Image (cartoon, rainbow, N blue to C red; front, side, top):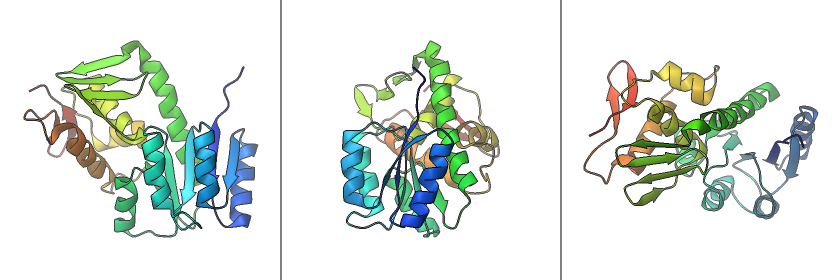
Length: 231
């Protein structure tokens, strides 16, 4: 049976929600549409989704609250925030709570579609690297099949974007990955490398993977990029 991509779209504007869901279905994606946070939460608990996209300002349950709750249920599902709030603080709040991407209204449908395709390509990449199902760098173990990251005896919860980033860096420990390489492989070709998003995600990984351990694995080569190095 052909694999079908399941998308959960949460948008309280009926016209916009209907338009986006119709266009996604025309692209071949099975799309569930929810108009408020309570309905979306119920759908998320009852179904398995490949991508979730939603606004922050939605009735009954704020999108940021939903994002945090979804992350407790599934820490790997890609989450795309769609919102009129374009301030950098709003973006950082969303990222801290577990969002993987952020689109500011108004936007073209093609932009949303491109972001979704990036995550689906990441899933294809994960299948491709299953020959390296478990990657070990020092006491860091990355399971590309089960989407698990363990350092020492500690299990570390990462978002889909964080997992993709650490998995990329671990493919070749010692290799320096430039921002352009990371952007192309993890965020897609149209990603603006002039933003500080990659630095933000590197800091997220350092806080989760390195901060409480004496030996640091994630390093920066100033002016060139980032890499993993054995202690």
